[in-house]
Length: 308
Image (cartoon, rainbow, N blue to C red; front, side):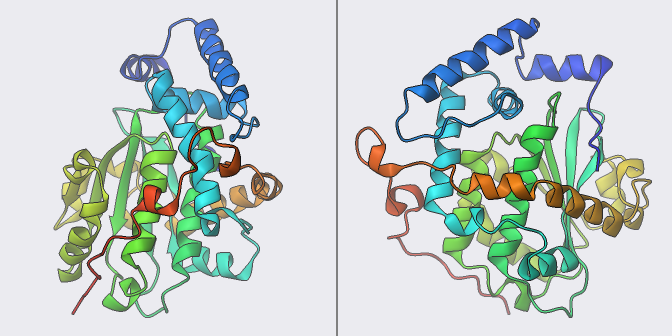
């Protein structure tokens, strides 16, 4: 699976938006500054490659302090939530099941303003709910691959969630604690610029799910959720042609795109295995170690997801 990278005027516009230095030497200088900072952090690994550091810089609009915060959380999450970052192998039965019943491919093209579009859809409402942790793990695996393969930098991410097969049974396994851990990982540990979330093929269950998730989202993200009653409304935000064939587009079927990403994830199996040891060591952190209560507020009470 190849991700089309922005070029020409679009690339120039994105670089301006991301405050990217015009001189590539300045980016290399910034990478050196981050490496020097990492070398002085006894609790953090030193193995982040240049490609991923560039993505962190772009995702943080070249704010050094923000990059440092994100990198610290990136490695901290691997220690704090090991269930998301171990056994990351698409050949495992549990992971294979997830990728068979949930399609979650980033699409190859870009929107006119330079955003990457990610689809998320179930394949059959009658299929039993797959392992929720494995589903979240697969999403983060794709995120790690994109850190390396978004080689130029995109303006942000647009998520399209197809709720056509969503049922109360599917969401019964989404506990508040698990959802909070996952969304903190995505929002705090990855250099993601979430521009829009679009929900299509809605049903009465959707409002309940959105209201359940909203408290765990940053306010600016809550304001970017769009609910569409018909597919034509989506086309106002995402060009029809760049969508999968199921939605009238030319990108190929969701299954073909998902299978291509499955193969890409398989290519990274050895890297994923190596990364299991790449995590924060809280015993070496200057000052007090970060605890689950501090990171996730697990001592609080949660509303349960109740869907009739």
